[in-house]
Amino acid sequence: METETLFTLLGTAIVAIGIGVTAGYFLRKSLAKNQANSLEAKAEKIMAEAKTKQQELVLEGKEKAQKMIDEAKHEERQAKNELAAAQLRLEKRETTFDQKLLELQGDQTKLMEKVERVKAIKLEIETLKMQQMEKLQAVASLTKDEAKLRLLEMVEEESKGDLMNRIVKLDKENSEVYEAKARDIILDAIQRNASSHSAETTASMVPLPSDDMKGRIIGKEGRNIKTIEKLTGCELIIDDTPDSIMISCFSPIRREVARIALTKLMADGRIQPARIEEFVEKAKQELSIDIRKAGEEALLKMGITGIDPKLVGIVGRLKYRTSYGQNIMNHSMEVGQLAAVIASEIGGVDPAKAKRAGFFHDIGKAVDQETQGAHPAIGYTILKKFNMDDDTCEAARDHHIDHPTSIYACIAKAADAISGARVGARRDTFELFVARLEDLEKTAASFPGVEKVYAIQAGREVRVFIRPNEVDDYGTVQLAKDIARKIEEELQYPGEIRITMIRETRVIEYAR
Image (cartoon, rainbow, N blue to C red; front, top):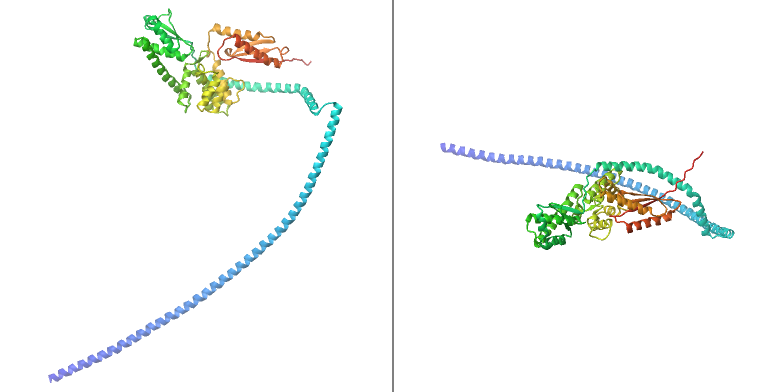
């Protein structure tokens, strides 16, 4: 019983499982079918939407394409219209150009006709002129050139008086203004540069420790003094002056070498020819160093830079050069300062360049005692050799001529005159100075036709006043040459003397 019941339960379970499996199968199939139907519906919906979107895009594309075609056609029509308008304008311009060309050709033809007519008239005038000239020459018995010369002489003679009166009037009016302005500039320059002056002679005094040293300097049979004089080129003057020896020489450099050598020999005590030669060489070397230092110090004080070292040495030699008792180094520095002041006062001129021109104006005097020629020409050559600027070179060359071409040469000349004309700047023995000036005036006054003579500028210029009724203008020129030649032959003087001739005709009349 129990077994049957067990089999029954087992069979029931199997049937139930079978039914469950069958039911699950059909249920899954039904679910799968429903799901497939749902996906297919979605796909169809998507496809429908895509077709709708595609149709919309196609329509939109067609609309845009149609719009672009319409715009292109519109632009094409505009371009055609503009091209047609441009072509129309071009055709109109061509027509106008053809008309202008025809008018120009017509005007050219008329102009050529007028030119030919003018040529014919000109030829006719020349013919008539030649005929008139021939008639005039026949009547006056003069050629064309002779008649022209006579006419010019008549005009010159008639207008000479009026022209001279006008020139004199203008000169008088302008000279007063220029003289006042020049006086102010010169006074200001002098007041702002009141430098001192030192005069040197042709002899230097050397102090001795005792009079016994004189005999040692002379040496046995004078061999020591002869050696010193031979090596230095100076003359040693040993007289009764106590405790001193005089060194005489025209060259300050040689005198300085001798002085240094003597000082060192006396300090050493061994005075004999070999030692003298040694100390003279040392003195030359020491002086060479001192000359270079003097040049450097002078250029530093003047604010001048960029100078060749060899030229610095030449500048230093000016320390041992004098002219009319005036030290040339001090004189050159003063002229440079004066030139700078004058340049700044007149305006339009570089004061620095004027200072340079004034400082180097007498550079030729550094070597003029050893070189052939006058110091202006020597200075010009030196400055050119060292590539100095043209204005400075011309100032050195032209500062003694009457009419310098360069403004810097004019300024240097004025500054040089101011420096040399200071009281005490250039000194000489009073008696010799007066005698020399008197001889100058007597020599110039000895010629016929001379009314008055004045020696000025410390004897560097002689002004001669001529009697106008006895000497004419041409005779004045010859008289100046004769006076200069007689001064050269009869008088002795340093440097050069300028002869200024003045011939003046003065007529006074009163209107009553």
